[in-house]
Amino acid sequence: MTGSTLVVSEIRAETPLIRRIRLSGPQGEALAPLSSGAHLQFMLPGLPERRCYSVVQLTQDEATEQHPHAYWIAVRREEASRGGSVRMHQLQVGDALSMGEPRNEFPLHAPEAGEGATVLIAGGIGITPIASHAAALAAAGRPFVLHYGSRSRDQLAMVGELEALCGPALHLHADDDATRMDLAVLLGHYHPGQHLYICGPKGMIDAAIAAATARGWPKERIHIELFVEAVTQRGDTAFDVELRQSGKVLHVPANQTILEAMEEAGCDPMFDCRRGECGVCQATVLEGIPDHRDYFLSDTERASNTLIQTCISRARSPRLVLDL
Ligand code: FES
Image 1: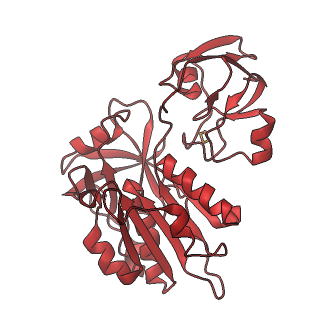
Image 2: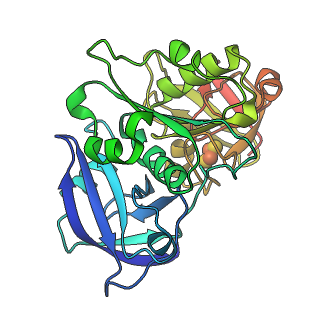
Image 3: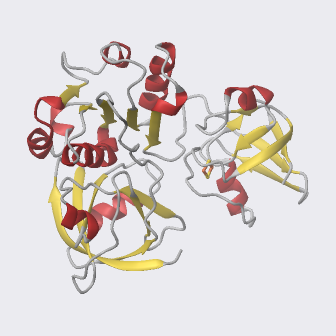
């Protein structure tokens, strides 16, 4: 991972679990401009894989956008994670981080003549890129609505700034009161021509896609960013994977992905997002039935059972044979 070094210049406790971290150049120099939806990649000491965090850019004036002097990210502490969020919560002001090239796989669409309000939906820490989109839309004078939900009111982050930024376009939801987000009802207030941006946990994204698709939303107007990498789901079991070309047979336990099993076995698999979105880790299935959990394959490809995203999808059969 080629890139640069950033230094922690400020830390704010947004909620008991969410920290907002300001990152600056070592000499306070201007940083590369980023568009809303961008994320940063870090190699954290002691962790083998890079970790990605979306930039929270609530100020979108031209000077800040073109010559930012800091990036803000927000990190929720997840005890069940693979260590990245815990490490990020241990950071102190003055600590240095090794950063790869910023990427944006969740960009905002270009302005369209007579466009309707863009519908932004965030769940939990998924607010980070969604808040940046709200700021970008507000700065450009483009219409939007923002629905932001969490398990409880005290887990909603940056509420004061979002209220100032969005005004009546902001709708807050908490699972433990009457404002709980019901995606089917919520989407019923909008029409399928509007661009829909969703960022949050997998269950929420799956529910939003299902609700939007049922209401006739075209796929190209549904923009998603999954905020977590593969997670173990209830009922996940172990299976075997044969890599036909290399002659290896790997055992994939319930708490591991095929990609991780390949890495552990000393293979050098291709990957990028590790969230089932980019297709870089795709493999051809020669035998067995995949359990598709990605957002990359088309319905037809999925039904053919001949392709699999090894970073997230699993097996419905006891054994898969891949053309690797
Ligand atoms: S690495 Fe992106 S889909 Fe698997």
